[in-house]
Length: 242
Length: 183
Image (cartoon, rainbow over all chains, first blue to last red):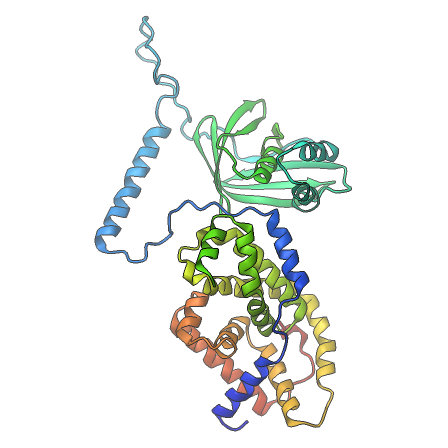
């Protein structure tokens, strides 16, 4: 191999060696997995415009600014006086308007919150009772998504810290991370999770002593996501772990 | 690749996606094998890449870029697969290398063995550029676009890969196995 041409020829000939067909079982397994895998939701907003002229850049910045101001005004609005006839008796002039999110104090304190043990049999029954799922989807949920086949107990925990959330699921005491991302509060009773792969999810919070329960606010189009949400986020109450 | 199929798959049509998979999986597997030099790892990388591409397909903006887009996903799946299995992959390859060094008396086989050993030693990102350029025959600009890297970076990776291969082949008859450098 004394010159470049010889080297390239040898390299190309060498690269030609080896398999050129994908094994059928690999493709079939992938397609079977895809049967029970939902696509990520597309918000329709490209991360970057193909060409950003100064005008489009300015317009984008203005739009972001308007959205930020709008969100702030919405988050700080009085919670319960929209559309309600003011009382005939004047309130005490010094009493401030109720604030949905007390400043400096989030509606849910940072920490780890967990459900108690849930019987796997109950989850399996819930999945099997869902008529909108196909048999293959049920099997995939039980065996793969939750990995609870032949197990006994299941629990869920949510870790909320510094604006980041991590959702864990535990099967017979073996812990695994389910999802993660950022979280924020729209108001005292609305929690927003943003996961990088699946986007935004809004939950109504019901506050209880030392914890909370969640109820999904927005519709979940995919039947598997819907039941996963029910099991992973709505199976509370979530009680703060000391 | 049929753009109509890509558009249908983007909107959640699994049958359309299956058709696309049958069109591109051979090429994807061939590339994965040549980057990873391991059939098992290449199979896992292909499988993960196909599932990832299904999940991410709604984000694809330009249907006619499907092949480049899915090759990028595949290359990242190769990186991930190599990282994930680095420890036990080395053991598998010991046997592979011992078998391949059995002399058969031909210069061509000796060259292939040298190339094989040398190739396993260069970083994966250089291997990816080398395979896309020399095996798929993509010009460097397209390699760069496929991998989402600047053209200059693609050029330098190809340069370093080529130099590493030439250096090893011309100066150092490699030891049979250096496990911590494999994959």
